[in-house]
Image 1: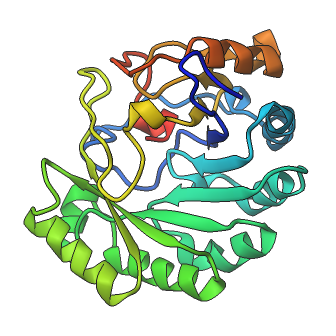
Image 2: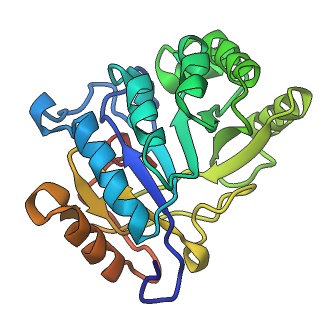
Length: 266
């Protein structure tokens, strides 16, 4: 399907939870956030149905995000349910990697194709500081488990302040070269200020070639990460929400005052 600016939209990013097992400085305040009620979160059956309606309209690429998707109970079952939808060609996940050692093989067997793992530093102390207590060794083991399971490619998402020449980013780049991983460098974004840039090593942030819609964990279809616009699939119906999101997709993102990274998936 094409939007108003003749961009082919074939990619749906689905936030499956607003929960996370880390508290990264740029994503969550130390005191935590007011989380959604359990009954407001989309069920697996609702997510599968949204995917099933999306595919005939032109969606063939799905990415599961959070929060942290691996904290969602029975996430492997959801991957399997999405994989059962005819016409889905690619299923990916973005994760912080903390639980990936446990889930990598079951996810692959359920139908997950590839994974992006967030890693802003390879320094254990710096990682613990940035994530407020995270154990980087769990991430390293998760990366190896993903490779061993057959998830490919394994991409590393590294948030930078300005350039990929920063010391932590250079160390991540070196680590990726050593371990046959693809590195992507993402300038730290600010939803409220409308600050973002094109991903170094990826396509995110390139508004001219954007191919995605977003679904929040409570069922809001969003045309753009940097937009307040959202259309409720429960109230409007799935196809109508998709059509409205497509029809209102901006040429370029501006600001988002409604969402935070923990509930829209970055």
